Length: 116
Image (cartoon, rainbow, N blue to C red; front, side):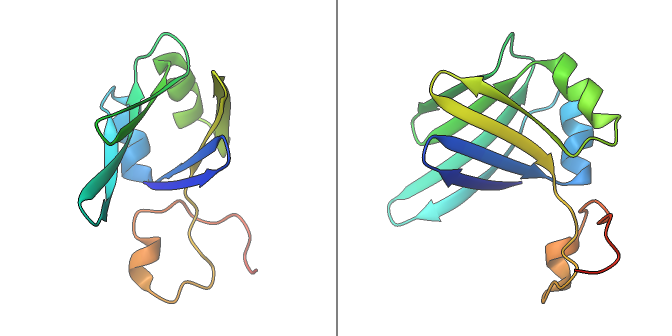
């Protein structure tokens, strides 16, 4: 999973296996190791509504299971919601057409465009 933060907006990009896990009701997470601190970011299915919390170095984004189930089985790229003052966007992570490292494309969704 990738996390992008810009102002009060969070954008999470998830790979195929992570979408499968979310659809099965399993939370997914990743982390960024900073000097003296781990920043963990977690996507949690099963929330009643979109929600974002930050506690103990963990950014947790809660998403209703129905939203994830509908999205996971569709051709839709992503979905979004608002949690207080934070805009949240969750997207399927597409393969990079010009990836310099093949590991960048592991388990990513096939890109719909044949070329850049």
